[in-house]
Structures are given as structure tokens and as C-alpha cells.
Image (tube, rainbow, N blue to C red; front, side, top):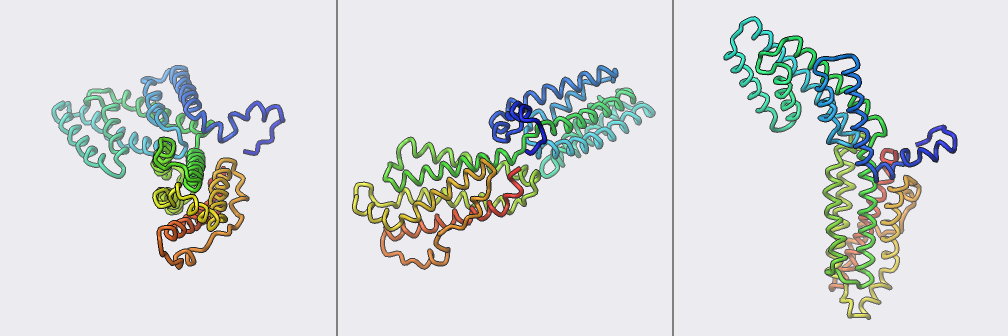
Length: 355
């Protein structure tokens, strides 16, 4: 982030402006932001003496309380606004008919039917809007006996809460792309560590190796959950993110196979021959993995533009497989090609994710 600030100010604000520090302290920043946001809603609604001002605070919690990533907050605020407007409109209509007709049983029946309709649509796409619409009906109308003025004030309070929640989501925004970048960088470093263990003859069944694999599997799930928010924040298509995810998944799967098909560590001669035959590939794979991890973490993406000496896909697939060692060699070449493809994908999208 390039801000024209004095040197002392940049040093003072560095912990807040540095993306990696904000990522590491995301929970603390989120908690402070929500607390200040709630204080603002309380002071505003009580300061101008708005009736039922507590609903502005409730809305603040609903919109940003459980969401720290900026991409999710915007979507949730829009859905909350739609749900509020739909539910408030229905609630006010119910209050009007109760006021003029004075038939409580009819009001109860209409409320039940309307909320049943919303519940039908609450399962599936747009479910959050439908659910909030049903909840807002009761917030605004009660059981149909709320004064019309109360319903209007509660609607206003909820809309105020949405506006303030959006405003505070822009204060030190916690972008999902930060989590995506740094988790992907960590996963690539773990891949490099596993590959080093495999080619150096270390055990692939001990606790340390299994711990790395479990951490990679957990990272895969976390990265998958972040993709929709990342796509919204930095305008990378879900297809492009899925291709990068697929390369990582193929890398992990190939590493697991390599760990089970490598030469017997006790067979020093076979291990030495393989080390010599694949010396350039071993070095290239580790350099690429660590290079991508560093580029993701630092945002310095020039290293991603450097072409590699990886054997093309067509050549790797034409290598004849005669024995287990040839199979191991072919898998290594394919791993190198897959990692190079991933590097090219990250280089292609770097202008989007290095914010």
C-alpha cells in the first residue's frame, strides 16, 4: 500500500498497513472493529434518540459479527438489505390489515403462510435472504399488534445498522485474498518440505511426514472455502482459481505416490543413481515451490515470470516405463511440469491478487 506519509508515520502504522501482519492478527483486528462499530451504533441511535435503536446494533452483529473477510461482508450486507426491505414491507402490510380489520386470527394465519413461503425458499440459493425476510416480518410486526410507527422505526434502525456495518467493513479491510495467498504459500512450503524428505530418503510414515500431509489436506479445504470471496474481491474468475487449486491437489497427490514408489532408502546404489538422473528436476522442483511461496507472501512477482527448464508434458508422457524406477522418474517429470504450469497461472493472475 503506497501512502504519501512521513517516514515516522509509516513506521508507526506499519503493523496496520502490512497485509501479512493484518492476516496474522485478523481475529484481533476483527474483534476491535466490531466493538468500535457497535459503540458507534449505540452512540448514534441513543444520541438522536431513535426508538428501538438496539436493532441497529443487532444488525451490525448479524452483518459483520461472524464475517471478517471484506468480500463476504459486502455480499452479506446486500442480502441483509434485501431481506430487511422484503420482510419489513410484508410486516407493515400485516400491521395495516390488523389495524383496519382487527382480526387477530387472520393475522396469525397470514403470518404463518408468509413465513412458510419464506421457509420454502430458505433452502437453496438465496436462502439467507428468505430467512431474514421471515425474521424481519416478526421484528417489524410482532404478532400483528405492533403500532405502525414501531414497525417503521425498526426498519429504519436495521437499515442504519447495515450502512454502519458496510462503513466499518472498509476500515482496515481483511481481504480473503490475504488468507488465500498466505495459506497457499504455506502449503507450497510444506510441499517442498515433503519433497525434500522423499528424495533424501527420510521416512514417509513417521509422525512428522504425516503431520505435513494432514496440514496440506486441511489447507486444501480452507483454500477451497476462500475461493468465492477471493473471486469477488479481486475479480479472478472461479475457473481460474479452481485451476490453481487443481494444480496444488495434483502436486499433493503426486507427492504421496512418489513417497510410496521411490527407491528403497536402504538401496544406496539405486537412490544414488536416481539422484544423479534427476538432479536438475530435484533442484527445479524445490526452487519453483519455494519461489512461488515467496512471491505469494511478499507480493514480489518478478520471479514468477522466469521460465523454467522443466521438461514439457509431451516429452514426459513419451518416456518409456520399464520398471519401478522408470515410473518414479516419469512421476517426477510430471510433477515438475505440473508445478511449472502452476507458476504460469500465478504469474498470469498476479496483477489481481498482489493487493
